Structure formats: C-alpha cells, structure tokens
Image 1 (spheres, rainbow, N blue to C red):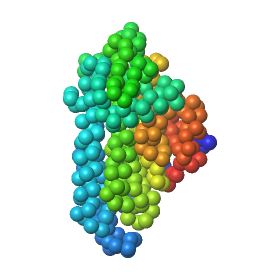
Image 2 (cartoon, rainbow, N blue to C red):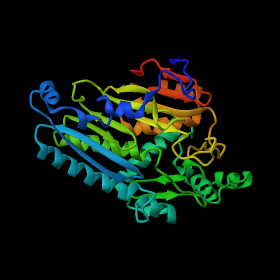
Image 3 (cartoon, rainbow, N blue to C red):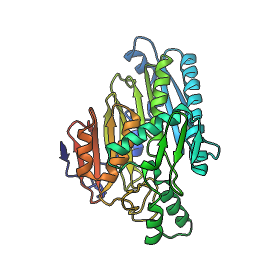
Image 4 (cartoon, rainbow, N blue to C red):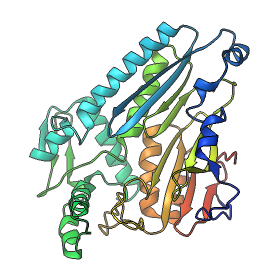
Amino acid sequence: MLKPLGRTPNTPNDAALVSRRNFLQSGTGLFALACVPSDILANQFPEPLKLVTRTSRALGTTVSVKALHPATKIAEQALNKAFKELYHIESILSIYRRNSQVSQLNRTGDLKNPDPILTDILKQSIAWSERSQGAFDITVQPLWALFQSCKKMDTLPKENQIKATQSKVNWKQINLSLCEVQLKGQGTAITLNGIAQGFATDFLRKSLKDEGIEHALIDCGEIGTIGTNPKGKAWTAGIQHPRRSDAFLAVTEIDDRCLSTSGDYATTFSKDYRSNHLFDPSTGQSPQELSSVTILAPNATDADALSTAVFIMGPDKGMKLIRQCPSTDAYMVLKGGTTLVTEGFPCLL
C-alpha cells in the first residue's frame, strides 16, 4: 500500500530534510563507524570489535566496505578476498574496460564460453525484463551512447536519431546459452549499469559471511549489510534528496534487506533533469513521472533492477510490480515533489 507523506522535497525549508554532513557525523550514518568510541563497541558485544575499512573504485563507482570483527587480521583477510572477487566481477561485467567480456560482446555481438558470472547476471536481467514487461532492459546501451555523444556537443539528440537508435533496443535480442551469448540485430549492445552494482554487493556480502564476518556494511552504489551496527541495531542509510546534493530526504533502517536508489539526478543530459540516464525502451526518452525510486529488497541484485524498472514504469504500474515481490518496499519521489512510501518502508525521519 502506498502512503503519501505530503512532503515537498523541492522546498528548502522542509523539516524532513536531513543535513548530509550532520547525518554522517551523527553516528547513525553509513560512514560514521570510525567516529564510534572503542568503549561503546566493547559494551555492545561480548568481545571488542575492531573496525576495518576498505575503499576502492569498481564498476564506475566508489566501493566502500566496513567490517567489524574481534580480530583485525581476520577482517583484513576477509576484505582482501572480497575485493579480489569484486575486481574479477568488474573484469567481466564492466562497460568501461575494453577487455571485459561485456565489451567484447558489444563489439562482436557474439561471445563463446561466457564466464558463469556473466551468464548468471544475464539470466537475472532477462527475468527482470520479463517481469517488468520490458521496462527493465539492458539493451538500452545504444541510447546511452547516443545521448552521451550529443552531450559532448552540448546538445540533445533529434527525434529521428532517437527513433533510429530505439530500433536497436530490445531485450529479446539477447540469445543466451551456457556456452554462448549472442546479440541479434544490427548495433545491439548491453549495459549492466542497472543491475551490476547490486550483483556485486550480493557477491561481497556472501564473501564476507563465508569468511566469518558477522557485522558489516557494503556500499557498491547499492547498500548491503550483515548483522547490526555497533549499537546492536539495524544499519541506517540516508536517502539522497533528488534536488539537493547536500541533504538527505529521509533516513531509513536497512532491516536485514538491501537498498538501491535510481534517480534522475545521477547522470543528466539536460539541466532540468528531464533527460537523464534512465531510458524508457518504448519511447527512447527518460520517463517524466518520478525523480527517484528507492527500493528495499531481500537482495541487492533485485533491489537494483527493481528500482530501475519502477522508475521506468511509473508509480502506478511500478507499485503493481512491487506487490508481486515478497519482503519488498519502496520510497518514491515524484517530479512535483510528492513522496510516496509503501507501508513497510522503515522511515526514521
């Protein structure tokens, strides 16, 4: 059920806004563990927990992992293993690396003996395309390339350019088997930017658990957690205000689920946010109903794909899809500023 909160995110005096700086320094934010005194950590757990942090770049974003464990060496070894797996994932899925399997597939339209990681994420991507009736579509890469090339010339594509490029977008042109991936159609190409960060988050989460980490925070652009924060409570995260980079619109608990946000502000092709990186395959343009969609779901891969799909579908059709997904909630911000939240979404502010 959607519950309108009656907020207007574009109003600077909105009492619901949370200063990003204050939130991060309050001890409740994603990046505040380093500020928690060691005596608090000792009092909350049977053994004093040591904080080990690792930050790097992968899949076009900053990746940050914070792990808590009584033995620093064990935490460091767990992070070493997790980041080794992350870089392996990037070497397969990145569209920014020329030698990745995705880049090879886009160049040739055919890839023999794909890595099981690529096969897995393609299967999940196709499944989400089916569930969303094509709203989620990893073959929008040609549209991205068109808009990006026009942006370099400080312009937007013409209607005939969009229409011509749109003909290359169709998830049904992906032919997948265990031993081969083919892209049918002239100029078809894929991007996994709408699902790869969530996929990587799930990989890191499992890797850390396998190494005995019971409390951790994983941020690959999408958020995953293990256990609780240093106070023994659910981890918390700020939901970015879509029009103010210095403020969060709300704070939520990540209650043993994963969080993902898709917003029109992340990558823009026009100053008014109307043209952005989120493309509707049926029009070749960006949808105009929503500014952002935040999803809480049992795993980060689904949260990532679903936030994209719901943004494309709009609040009404998107809500129907959310109802089909167990243990899933949403926080939506419409273009006009109204905020819609499912009943089970845990808003602290």
